[in-house]
Image (cartoon, rainbow, N blue to C red; front, side, top):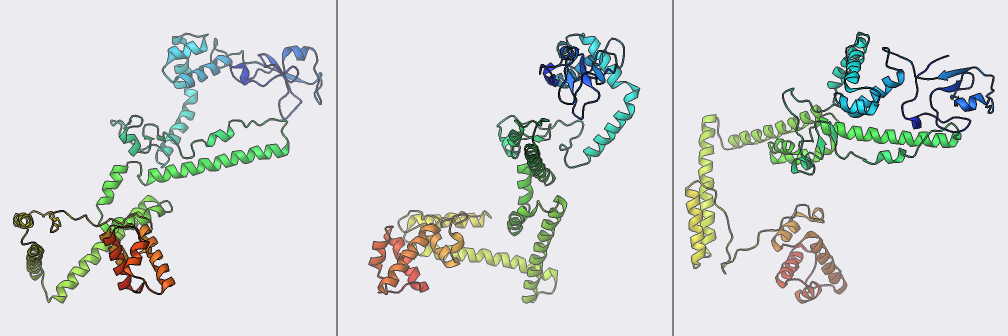
Amino acid sequence: MDRLASFGNDPFDKPPCRGCSSYLVEPYIKCAECGPSPFLLCLQCFTRGYEYKNHQSDHKYEIMTSDFPVLEPGWTAQEEMALLEAVMDCGFGNWQDVAYQMRTKTKEECEGHYMKNFINNPLFSSTLLSLRQMEDHLSRTADTAIPFKPTDDPPRPSFDSQLSRDMAGYMPARADFMEEFDNYAEWDLKDIDFVDDDSDILHALKVAVVDIYHSRLEERQRRKKIIRDHGLINLRKFQILERHYPKEVQDLYDVMRRFARVVGPIEHDKFIESHALEFELRREIRRLQEYRREGIQSFCGAKVYERVKRIREDERKKRNMLCDILQYIHDARACQQWLHKQAAIDAGITPVVTTITTSGRRSAPPLNLTGLPGTEKLNEREKELCQVVRLVPGAYLEYKQALLNECRRQGGLRLAQARSLIKIDVNKTRKIYDFLIKEGYINKA
């Protein structure tokens, strides 16, 4: 009699009997000659001499049971497997729950047997050593959790908090995301079951579905690796680091961020740092070229030149403010505003520039066209017009096309006709009409 391990404690984990299709209960019979898939029978079908296809009642057989000791007397193989499954389900150290799930052993028996045979057993020392070496190897790779010092506790942001949203739902203690990329990829596998009676086409289809699932897992792992390697989890820290660069380098950073996935994080940082250094060198070269054009031959002279240049710029600002205020000399409020600006400059404070009209009302600031659709279709003069008139690029292009079509149809265009075509403020219509006339897009009738 060969005594072999069972499939588990749950009878539904065992394959059914080939005779009566009932779930097998130990002990049961396995045919030693039929294969490669096991031919299993319960004791009732075996005693009746059940035969099916190639299986005959006189074949050699094995009795499958786990009711025998493995590590020490008093603990059968079935109980050993039940202990390991209970520890896996309840966690190491929860011996009360482990004993409750086993039902045949007490808390002290479960703890003593597990510590003696699975923790302190010298037979497993080589296996534990290989596991430690594997863990050390994995800790040096980028696919593990973000390392923390032994005395530090990794951040555990609460669900739906601001910190959790900033970290994209990343859980550092588990090295995982709350919601993965392609989060429902496993749903395609939940109903797939490989059965011996499957046809070749159905079997190949199931294998293809599994291969597709593996490719989706690889893509998920690739994205997680990019996020970890480039430090994109801590968004605030990443933004603060990016602000250290000049404006030109920040624009380059935004453009080249999409190529970061192609190269590693160190190569990408070297690329950005090299361009930042190039920008600094170009700025220094332009400054030295300016000194040479001004005839400066020493750094002492350059210091004097920079000091005089700052004084000259300050004086120019004062003159510009005076020119701005002279046209409103009869406006008491405008004069008071100019005095406040002058006092701020004398005190070394940057003045807040506010444009004041003759009626005493503040004019609207220019329109910011950043990110508006249609901006890339405008030239510099058209962008300036849209900013001053406070007109979005899409509306301006529509009005421009309407005026151009009417001008071609009639051979010219008058202001009154433009106002009848464009139903907006008459002052804005006049500015658009004058601009198109000046740029040569349309002709006067």
